Amino acid sequence: MKNTFTLCAALLIGSLIFSTSSFSEEMKITVNVKKFSKSELEAALIEHSYPLGGTSFDNAKGAFYFLNKRDLLVSYKGKKGTGKWTANDNSEFCYTVTIWEGKECITLLSNLSSGGFIHVFDGQNRILKETAIQKGNLIK
Image (tube, rainbow, N blue to C red; front, side):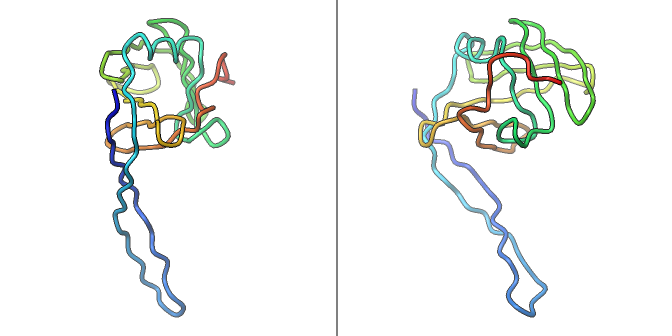
C-alpha cells in the first residue's frame, strides 16, 4: 500500500554579512512510503540491530537489538538495558526498556522514493539509510 507522507524539516536560513539574525522556515517534502505489516516488521527487526538517534550506525547515539518477537537489548548514550517489544499491523513497534520509563512507539515506513526508511518518533521524522537496520547484534 502506497501512501504519501509529508516530511517537515526545519530549514535554517543563515545570516547575511554583518547581520546577527536568522530564522527558520518549514519545508515540506513529499515522499512515497509503504507501511509494514506486523509480520514484515518482525522479519525486518528480529536478530537485527536498529540505530537510535541517527540515520545509520555511523552517527547513532545507541541501538536496539531485537532478540525475538518479545525481547530486546538497548544501548543509548553509554547506558545499557533490556526490554520488551511488540509490532502491529500499522507499521509501528512499541517497547518498554529498563533505561527509560513508560511505553514508547516508533513508526517505521519503507521509503519508496529514495530507499531506506522513514522513522517517526514523538512527532519527529528521520530518514534512515537503506543499510541502517543491520543483521546481528551491534550493541557494544
